[in-house]
Image: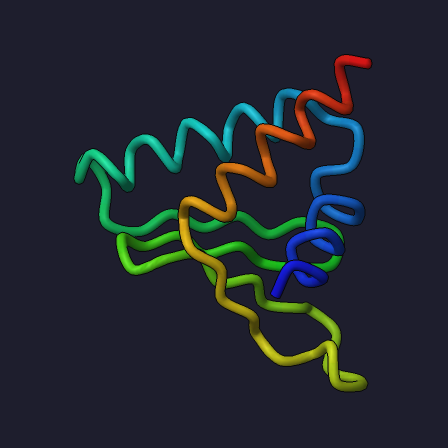
Length: 89
């Protein structure tokens, strides 16, 4: 699962602090119950957030990596916060 999150960050968020902040804001909205679902499609994946977790859906269908992967909202938040720290370096 961690590999799917890393691929998502590298290919879809890339060097954008603004996209990272947008996803973190969406996480806040999901966790507070303000919204029940949120979706973003990037270069290689679609990210779907619900109160039950985050699903990373590859846009390409070849190979084992093509299966949707789930991570908890906490795992996603940690990954995004670490990614944002790297961007600031």
